[in-house]
Image (tube, rainbow, N blue to C red; front, side):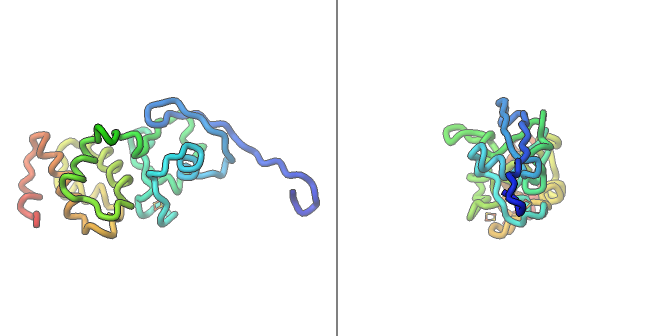
Length: 176
Ligand code: FES
Ligand code: FES
């Protein structure tokens, strides 16, 4: 109802996309943000809202394989694209190797940043199987962690790289 007493019609759009490798569609207002659609329409709560400004990375999902701040992305913009959330990355019985590496290296404390961090690492390793420590730090600069001091996170990523036969002297030399 508006100020004149007339009924307002709220416009919605139907958007189809791929969500965690399965076809998905949802109806929502054009102004709605991807994080809200994922959390409220699909019940996928892994992406966290924190800064709401596109700077902390807590809301990171992958769109066509690249990190995307879902707090700053219109849901309508993922029409026809591939969206991956942390829920699409493994199961409790069969974790993604990145998730397992974070556990093995103690690379999380409160866990608030972890879904976004893991997805960012996923994108990094998909584009660069053998990142240097500097490359890892640079790639993850948009993912803020208030707990870990980043050392364990970097160790987890470099540990994965080591499993792939990569020389990790840089991180091994710096590790605590
Ligand atoms: S909540 Fe989206 S970048 Fe911080
Ligand atoms: S583990 Fe708490 S913010 Fe990263």
